[in-house]
Length: 422
Image (cartoon, rainbow, N blue to C red; front, side, top):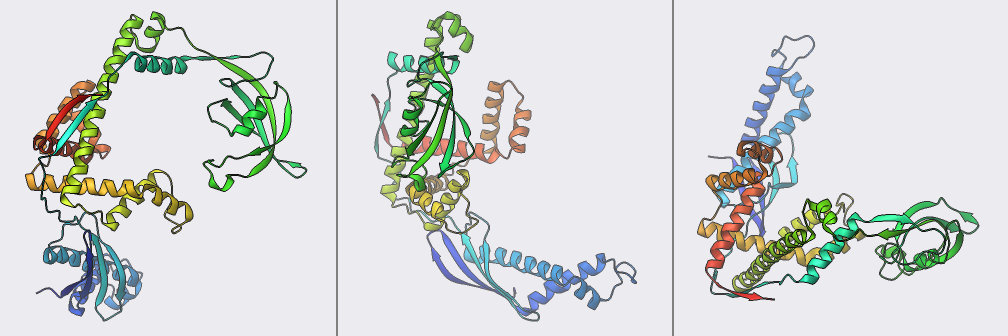
């Protein structure tokens, strides 16, 4: 009989808090095991290998033995908890309030996130509209203009003052009282919100080589909230003005951007790509609408612990640190992304529940088939691609994608999807 007792302290839809007590007898077994291990490996002066007295080994490796004991009893406690409590963990547990005194039991709290149980009351019978955006000539023209801008040359402008659309090379130095700070160079395109309006206005009053001291006010919607509405005095020097020269839209341009023989062929390719994007966007919108219907019909929760997990992931992606506590920037970030995190949690839970109930998890054969198709498209062997994905840790990502596709295929087959043109 195990000398480990586990009592449930608290729970919500997605977490469990368990109070664990490991009896003295079990702790002593773990300690004796750790002492024997270190005694067999110890290399202490004056003693042959493995012959050092136990008392000396205990004293010499006291902290390491204690750590080994804790790792042993915590590991077994976690295995026991999963078995006794029927847990479905979605992450490794955290250990809190650990108590371990020599000769006494080990006590601690195990906190673990678990997948909430979702009772699927309804998974079909919804009416959904799939609207594919029409690709018109204006969309193709817009895409062509973007391509021209990427291939444009910037040519020097001799004399005169800059205007919106011009690229300028400037230097800006802060002024504090009578002291002028270090100047910083900038290349900006005027009229594209790359600088505060007051600064652009001052730049457009200059000619190359001229300098002006001016007060610049930061607008109320400036990204750095600390500077909103503030006025700073700066010294601005204009060095150079350039204008954009777009390449002509002709067959030569088409050949340069994509090895197309004619401009008409390039336009056809753009139309095909935009049409493909429109189809993908329509599919994504149908999936999103379906998730909304499923979440509402099944009352899917968004447990705080899972929402916090997503907020933590988003903050990491945006380079916002949790290391120094709950700072003001983190609070604002979490407030901004809270609804997005909640929606992601509900989405994951409802899809997970459907996958489990209908047994839609991606199989090895399906994963191999997908890898084979991707490999053929890239002109590499399936074995090489598999190795690349494995090395990059992306096999689970591929498996997840296949599983989601299967889930949505099944779900959409249970509802009505009406095609519409927008």
